[in-house]
Image (cartoon, rainbow, N blue to C red; front, side, top):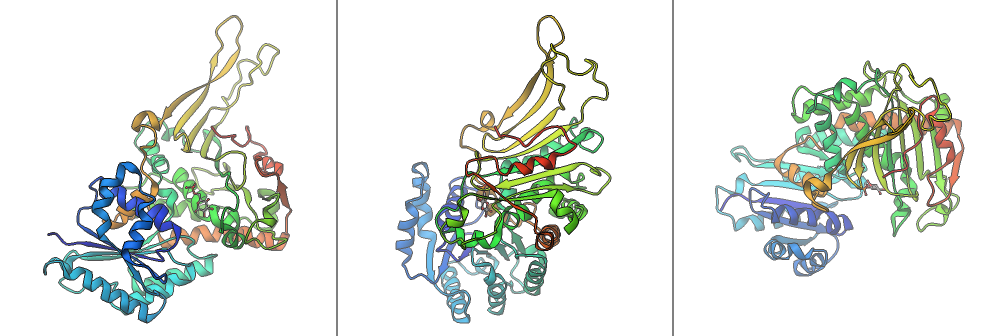
Length: 491
Ligand code: BG6
């Protein structure tokens, strides 16, 4: 028997465990991706047996994974314990020791242990301190290739001071290479493909700069509103903290970064952090011009939302990256709940040719010469499209817009793209940190977002209403000023 990996999910009663983590574990197991046997321990204050937990989870198992589930299920164990108390941690320590007792000596010491913190954010620091105090985060000398890692779910702090304090608290007990801060957008295949597209092809990169690109749009539009019990959390966060600080700024960093020196995690993260640090701060004077906030009609009556709440459910930002590659190119960011359609896209709009040989619009030139665009469809309809002009066959010179496209489903088949958590979980088990956020990245992103929040607090710009099922507040269109195009309407 080879050494086992213990995966400890702290806060296992939340639906992240049943909807994302266990399905991701199961798919990895079914595909034979785990190099070692796994023992999974779900920890929560809820009292139930391991058998009852497995029965609950089995309801989520897809028919095609039934056989794999039957094999994996006996390795899942439920532990009733309060991870926020020393007694709870002692119980956990004992349980982990008992589970490993069945493993031959010589293998036990070399086991890997992953703690997945699916807890209330206020508990991240205290629980890591308690795990450390119980000796659960260190390998003893002579443990060979045994390892201890901690995965932290979002939100990582609520502003720069709290994120800095949390980083400091974690680094008291862990090395940076043991900390895996999750942003599940980085686990999406299409987000990872941004780097492949840019740096494994010679044709895009020469155009990927201020000389050729007029604007970059990053839209993450959602149709969901405040389903279930989401309202109480969301009302304290808002679109800026819930989506921009992490997902949108991560996509921006990957789109804008310089080529890394290697594919090593730190080489990539060094380049990403430089982009985030180059974002021009939005001062209170600029916030009214460069940021539009909105709230969908009816938000105030959603369950868990404070009456009269001024939390934004939509935000649009005209951001600038002050470096040689991007100086002066607006990055137009937008995200919202309760919008007309669900899609995430990055659109690079290229500059118009320097001379318009058609001499401007004429009655027969019905299609205006508009910039080329490259559309990265992150989700759904994963793929990309390159827009350009062609001559309409026939007399006269009439232009038509045409597209070259690539569709992921043609490559791997419908529904075959792995879920983000499947990849992220496997990477954390293998110690691959590229798709996780480093401490300085998270702080740089908060620095930018905090500037906007300070601007809102000081300048109090309007909170625009928008109808649920619409494209968001009309005022967001003004962020395109001086650029061709308007917000994408999605696939
Ligand atoms: C989460 C946000 O991080 O991402 C949610 O907290 C949002 O508000 C979700 O709905 C969107 O993720 P996805 O993968 O469905 O686009």
